[in-house]
Length: 315
Image (cartoon, rainbow, N blue to C red):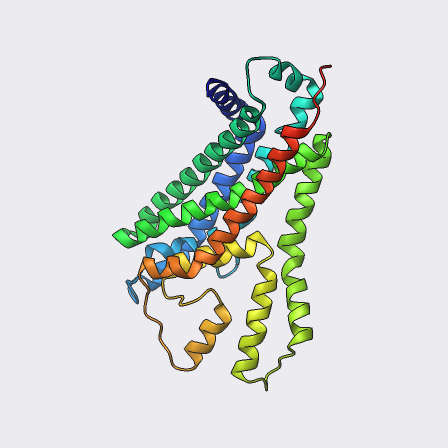
């Protein structure tokens, strides 16, 4: 346990003292403030029209000229932070020879990877909690509408899901750090996977769904629903889509499911969905949360097993 603590505190100190993370965090803070400023300007006029969950709109409303919300901002930057925290966790130590010297100490091998992973989770949590708190305080000052108790509770759930989303990308980058000896290779592999899932997974899902279940303006509601179900099941291969569906259902209490298409069909049919309690929203996003936890656990378990079995020679 002592070795684990030593690795954890050393890794955490290295992260705080790294210029790379300071610059990255400053960019994230500035971008977060910019998106929340745009959102506050757009919801100011609607405060008097509806008082239901006004504060939560800060995190989902985008600008009229710049379609960029705080939620979209997090879905892009959290993977970058997670990859930055893990892509050189193991191979940089191996290349420099520190890993072999470290393991000559009275230190268990699993303390190394576990300490690095936990330090990354803490660093990721500090970043997400601080940026959400910062933009929430700024938004409160700009719109002048304080959050109710359920909105605060939903924000805590939103932060937890965001940390879980970042943990997946960090575990994936740690996996590549174990598999590849060069840090540049592990970084490029992590970024390639992120770009593929973020940019192309939705296009592939739409292509497959439209081929299996073609829909047009004359399609029935049942056909549209079948198409949407198939499309979403395929697109959920991407952790970004799992994250987006989860946080939308948490930050939009009116969502009775994770499909905007089905929500629009209900609205056009004359249904006016009432806000759901947070317990019901959690039930809706439970499959997405379990999937994120499973993906994170699988990536870290593979990295853990590979690291524990590999031969590490002194240099």
